[in-house]
Length: 103
Image 1 (cartoon, rainbow, N blue to C red):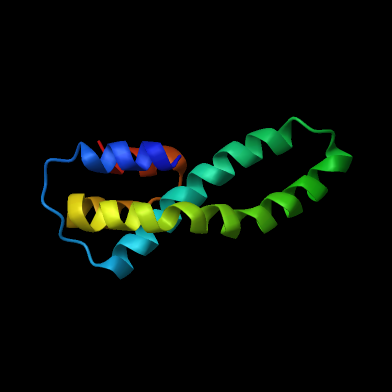
Image 2 (cartoon, rainbow, N blue to C red):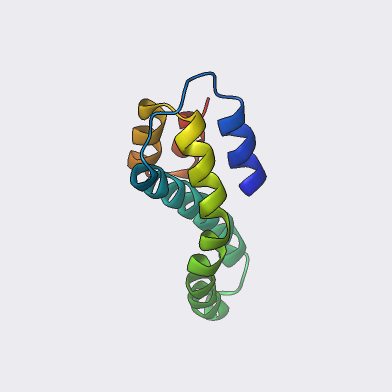
C-alpha cells in the first residue's frame, strides 16, 4: 500500500501545495478506505459466526498499520500532491474514489 501511494505521488506533475495537516487527513482516509476494502473482502469469506471476531481484530490493527505508512505518505503528499488531489482524497468515501484522486 505504501508503495502505491509513493508511486502515485511521485508520478504527479504538480508542485506540492498541501499542508502537513491536510496531507495527514488525506493519507489516513486513503489508507483507511483501502484497508477496509481488503479487510471486508477477507471478512466476507468467513462463515457468519466468525466475521465479528475478525472485524474486531482488523479494527484493532488499523491504527497500528496506518501509522507505519502515514509519515512517508504525508511527506510525499506535501511535496508532490496538488490541493485538488488532497481535497479529493479527504472527501473520498470509497477506495476506487480515492484511487481516482491520484490519476
